[in-house]
Length: 328
Image 1: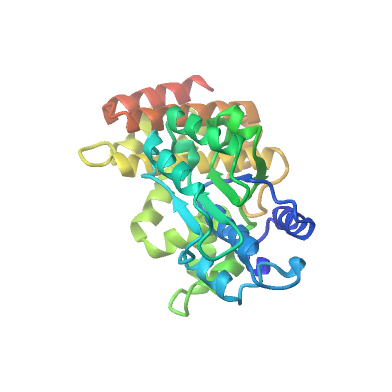
Image 2: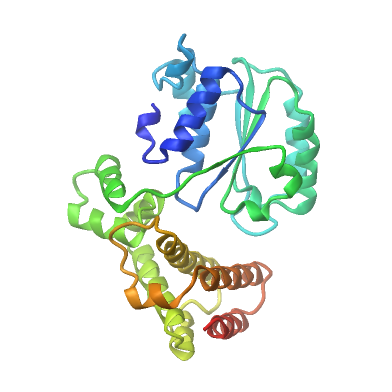
């Protein structure tokens, strides 16, 4: 079953070792960008824990009743806990309810598994409440957390978790995955285009294929990122203007996340781990250092937080452009 999870051989081997040795930690944290497969891998871990196959090294088998129930989000002993995808949307009441439920014995399996999606959206109060139970968890409980940036998770939670980083695929692997995950109505040309725009991110590529509006947003984001790279503050502001308006906060956040992806790709390239088909010009690669790219990421995160706090989008856009210009 793990063969169906593309790339990330190190993460898969880590899981195999945990299951084979019978020493899976009570708390795991899967870290990776949106679309990297964190929830899919989390379900595979849960399936491995509840799998009925007699040989540990073959778990999850993907064929037994428990594996099928887990992967379809139907198993009574696997609970997904999540919130809206915005800052501080994950509240303490959800964690308190989880803590109460965790002490109830499993319904059907040997253990209970809680999949906590996007813990970086938790309030600090919620994270502290979670800390209390992962410090001394019930014997039959495993917590699997996901986040896109461990820096947004309390150090005390990190210190009690086994962190498993997940990375996006190469573009070639992404194209192959899209061939398996889409039907014949999707042409190979569109798969190649989506894989390229998504920089190997399978989840993002699928969203691009499903939504022409998403395709335009990704193209706009790459254009905005290129304006940042060449120091064109006014042109950057023009790129953002279409996303500054009434009822456009979610679109603006998506645009910022896509711009973030461009600079994450730049960092990977500078560190020698990028894909072979990047369209980032060599002049940009030479001009921007990893430190400058990290500074841009910090500016993007600040802008995203301001959007979530209902700051005027015009003010956010202006501050974002000025901040990006200052990095030059």
